[in-house]
Amino acid sequence: MKRRDFIRKSASLSALATLPSLKACALFLSDLPADIISFNAVDLSLAIRNKTVSCVEVMKAYLKHIHTYNPIYNAIVSMEEDEILLKRAHQADAALAKGEYWGWMHGMPHAIKDLAPVKGMIFTSGSPMFSDRIAEEDGALVKKIRNQGALFIGKTNTPEFGLGSQTYNPVFGATGSAYNPSLTAGGSSGGAACALGTQMLPAAEGGDMMGSLRNPGAFNNVIGFRPSTTVVMSEGDKKDRLLWTSGPMGRNTRDLIQLMNTLAHKPDFQNLTPLNFQEIKIGWLNDLDGYLSLETGILELCETSLSKLVAAGAKVEHVKPAVSPSDLWTCWTTLRHHTRLQMREYYENPKTHDLLKPELRWEIEQALRLDEKQVNHAQTIREVLYGALDRLFETYDFLILPTAQVFPFSKETHWPKQIGESVMDTYHRWMEVVIIGSLGGIPVINLPTGFDSSGRPMGIQVMGNFGKDRKVLEFALAYEQITDYLNVRPQLIAAKDRTI
Image (cartoon, rainbow, N blue to C red):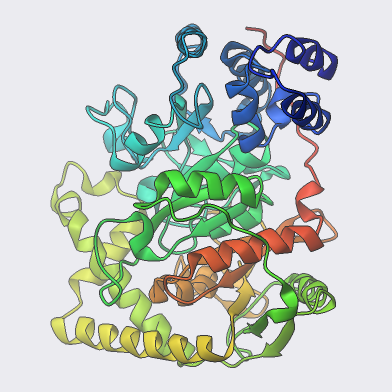
């Protein structure tokens, strides 16, 4: 629907009875893009609630866009039939007409990462073992999103069981970056990030163990937030922090915050305002004092963004890692591999053993070699990291690192075997840059930091101390005010036209 149609339709809105609200509506409409799919999630929510657009119009616009581009990018899988989705959109409009408002996602199309069950939908986890599995119940996060009125249209693609920062699996294939579909979207929330970057979804969520919200955020020029591990998850506490957590992604920070309020145990993320950078001190961890191998050009992009922060008044200082990076890697691999014992039954079952991806079989084998002493030693290193981070955050408000060690690479490559002269000795060594945030259980947000000469996007990780999630999000709001990276839209490649 064109902008003139929005304006004509808005003139008859009975809800806009007073002059101030009419002025507010006019200002709102003047800021809207011409195409529905280009609305940011918060704006789309307001447009639906005010009946500026109907849920049917929104669904039609998204389905047309998805059918045009998804065959190329492969972000959304297990799509529901158009007729079913349009019927649900009609029901959402009928509810609004009766004064029923389901929540801020009322009538908005949404797709859940294919590691979470949505009642009645295919739930594969990217594994051929579960290619026909139908979920019997909603997962905990799905219930929260459904309770806000979202209409589930399908799932977002993920690597098998979420393993690896490259979204490919034998069930659905690989997902491409929004900025070049021949390159990987990252992972494991690659389908979600690509769907945001290509505007196939207004909002998205995922999980993050080893950068799975941050890495695809960087590879698709969107924002991914790994909250403190107790904010969304019901397990663990400040001392016994999980290695992973669910979290939101967004086309911008405002949208991400809105979804964060839905996912969190407590909606503590209201009334956030951009930070004043003149009051902020940042520790720049760079490449961990030469420890990390990074592809040429990444540090330069990060330092350009840091210069913008300095120009805005922030103080930035180089910081050396507070704990030996090699000790952290030992800690990380020990604890990560130990979690794979929960999948031991698939490894030991002859019927499923060969259906597991080789990297998962390898991780289980590593786990089987661990003893209690090694696990306890890893926990000790992690506790040392907790203390080291606390001390750093006494001096610095935030710590910053690159989000990834490589730019998006060919989606036909399962994982980078080498960075520069450094050979990667494991399938996940190339994502070592994310483990400080993961081991710390602290809030970390990926923010865009620009593009290389080939147009490949990159991001920075902004880390706050445990429990300081609001402060990290307020940093992101301020960062958007001094950068324009999110305004650089990809040139999408269309599949054969299809009408609905």
